[in-house]
Length: 252
Ligand code: IPE
Ligand code: IPE
Ligand code: MG
Image (cartoon, rainbow, N blue to C red):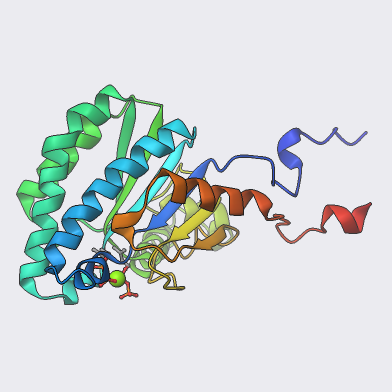
């Protein structure tokens, strides 16, 4: 006899809260420009919005929060802005690590280690190590992250295994590729939010968002708060996730 469907097999998913929310935090520069301020002040206010988002994620019982904080393409920006963003990341870890740890946040970082200065890399490693056993919220920081490079690295790793005779080509499966990605062990995002009105992925989690629900918010990232987060979740809950199956209505 076929096993009874588990509650998680419900194809709609509409009542299930998102386990994993991924955010493309966009619009710091435009927030500043509209106020006649330098872009750097937009990034500073963006860090405040990160703090609000982490607190809200804990309140809303989200298990994984992934934030896109620096893309592999952001190196194209002026050196002063890059330095500013690197400095903000260092300050964020130095100032917030103890509090995040106390709140039970586990930190994970995805992205390439290359080009990132060693002082920042050491701080990141320290944060990951200190918080590794926390389980309230996993905060995944996408830093120097680009999805195409991530997928290419996974493909290269598996190709090396095949070339060495340790893996057969038939073992290059969806699961094998997923296990080689930086996000290995992290469930795919249920909900992807992008602020600032832009509607593109900008090389973020291309593999992992295959069945994520996308919500685009008009507000700039520095204005993001708990009510914006709740609005995005309400929108998520109104969607019917079918994963290629049929809607409940068509099956009735
Ligand atoms: C997001 O804001 C922060 C990063 C990409 C690091 P932007 O800096 O992209 O702001 P806009 O898009 O220019 O307004
Ligand atoms: C995506 O935003 C990267 C981050 C939010 C860190 P961008 O502002 O870099 O994306 P584009 O250039 O508008 O696509
Ligand atoms: Mg932008």
